[in-house]
Length: 235
Image 1 (spheres, rainbow, N blue to C red):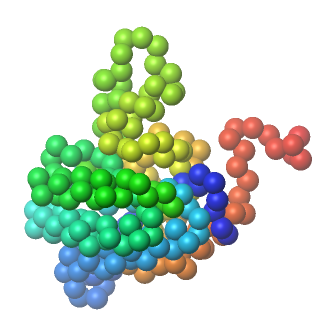
Image 2 (cartoon, one colour; image 1 turned 120 degrees about the horizontal axis):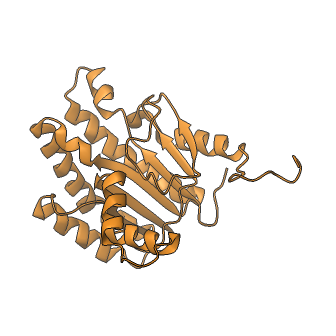
Image 3 (cartoon, one colour; image 1 turned 120 degrees about the vertical axis):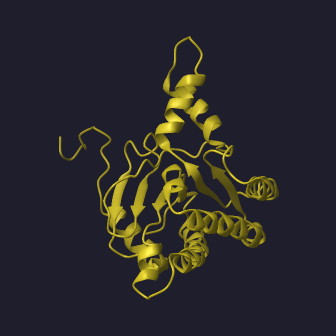
């Protein structure tokens, strides 16, 4: 399937730690391999015509992991931004990191801001990376910031984008993919996924690759999206 228009894919990249443990490696090795897979999937997504790709890199709940693993993950994120920004520029991929920034190391925040500024003009695909992200926190914070007047969908979504540091209108998620076998949203894009098609696979993220992406897109292509309505042929 070739996705066109404003097609938005979100991925919960699960299974890095288990991939490493099955090979007798430290969990950090799985995260390194997972970062390499991000590059491949980003490039494959751009080739497939996906316009927005949102990746769940570090949830707010991940702060509860052992400190060495958390520190390793944040360093890896900073290294990824430093190494991949130039590649994204070549491929006209705009980088946007969503989520909280007040709890991130200052060096990582600077790396985020630099990558966003350098790729702000890119138009082929938007790559959104969720870091210190909690959908429940974002929704509550958007409501808190709301004026006392009437709050409609448009104004709420603008507030949500402001809370999340989301650059421009990413649109609703069309397809949510989760690797690693679990079948839950884990506080990821709850508002955006209101009518998303869900695709779960047992494949661990470091093994997902372009083939895994194409399998998910092919499955999506065979689904009927009714958005609560009745299709004409069914009626």
